[in-house]
Image (tube, rainbow, N blue to C red; front, side, top):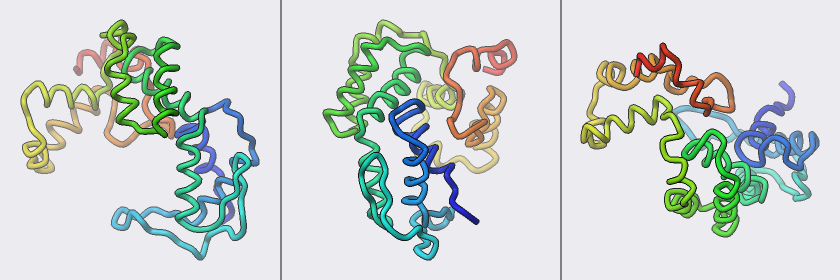
Length: 211
């Protein structure tokens, strides 16, 4: 069916380096070739089809990769610790938790921790929750519906065991329907870039009434 460049582009633009980073269309195409063979099956999360792998060596951002799952993992590991990834994901975290337009110092500090720790999310999260700029921007964010429901469950003292014990009608009544009414149907983001961050997308008269 031909090469699908979309996955390569989304990995670079959305999940690692970010739009505007120093990569080319050639890098997008080469990464798409590296990723060939990957497929998805809800009952087999490690499914791989070697018969559809693009043979040979591909070069992404100046680094050569071969065939197979280990090489795919190596490519993703390299992208995860790239400086552009550190900056891009540090800004996404700061935007989600601190402010729609987060302080540059907060983003820079999170990116530095990302780089120094090799992309350790625990270290980055610890830096975020203890950063003075987070306290300075307190209450500037609107919780997205998923986070709103999670916070409500915590406030009500509902533990993981109780939540996992809900049957399907209860899950729909207590979790899925409220999220949908608040504008965030579970697992159905409008695009591959996920849900919008600005408060204006979540705090409208209708959606605030649903909350």
